[in-house]
Image (cartoon, rainbow over all chains, first blue to last red; front, side, top):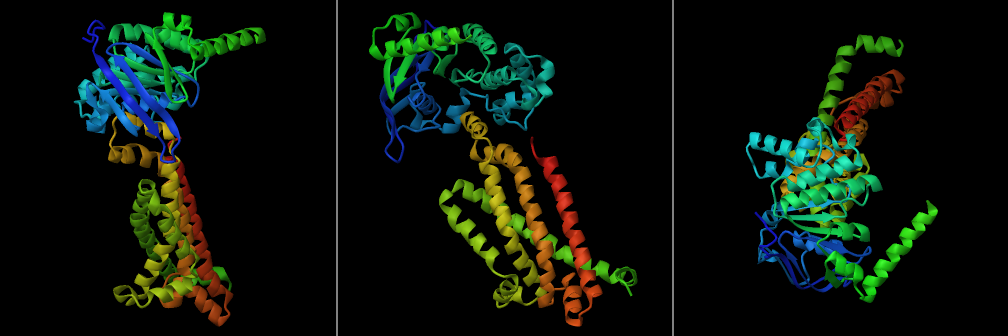
Length: 258
Length: 210
């Protein structure tokens, strides 16, 4: 349905700034567009403003000035509850409800949207299969799952009501490298099929290069640049270079330590 | 005559007075739950009310119980009967642990869980009843437990204003310098406190989500 050729803008930031009431500035004059069906990776170090940028999209944070448009409408004019139910949200450590079974976790949005019970059951079964989890896990509690399984449940939960937009905040950061690579691979396959508009936050350059159709580098509340991965890797922008160099240095360091 | 004989001879009266005691405590706790839990929820939503509400509940706790009975005496309807007075005083004492634990329980819910719920479009009401309260339940029950144990002990003092309960034996025993009478009040009171502690402790573990 959402073919990438239909190159509409799903999300747009216009001169967006965000400041705490104490005056500390987290985001400065951000201008950015996210196209339908693309995977935009927000890359940057801790405190660069990438998570704030993400939370502006589903109105968990409201801009101090400027406007964030989702599907052409400023978030201020959306009913926040409606807005959020149309946007899938995946966070680090999954944020699953510990007192809900896997099934109830996944069916959260369909349930509060009052889908009929049999439709919910079918959808849960479908989603478990989609994210590569065995149907027998549906009655388990999150504490009975591995980190990778929890994160898959988190992805299934975000996809439950088939939202056109998916926000992912360092979803794989807490996983071991093998599981992370596995989930990245599956994310790519899934995204190929579903063609969602994805905004993906990470500080991991390799993850960004691997998953992004475009990489937006952020540094102390400003957008440095937004480029496709191949151009990003060749960019001569000093801040991009700094990030690329820091990463290859730490990768070399790791290899020496192994 | 030793204590056992006294218990055997007076067991129906002791049972009646224990029942009275239990009734006072139960009604007080019920009142405190009905008022304290909503107040605890309120201060998680309106942080500006946090200090005044917790502060007031704190100050009430520091008033000596006999003095509190005295303060409440002039109240219309309440002051007319000793048991009403005692129940109000006890529920005021029970308020602090309930408000504090409800607040702490809700604030203690993993922020990422709450944020995930909010981010997926749960309303404040849904978040409270489906996520925050169920996950805080263990801590809230712990507050009920503390409040109940406090009230079982304090209720003995209610006999000083004629509200009945196990305190009657204790005050009579003190007046007559009769240890058996004191024990006739103190032993069941201690047993009640222990029983409340153990059973609510069990409930607390059952209802804790982890």
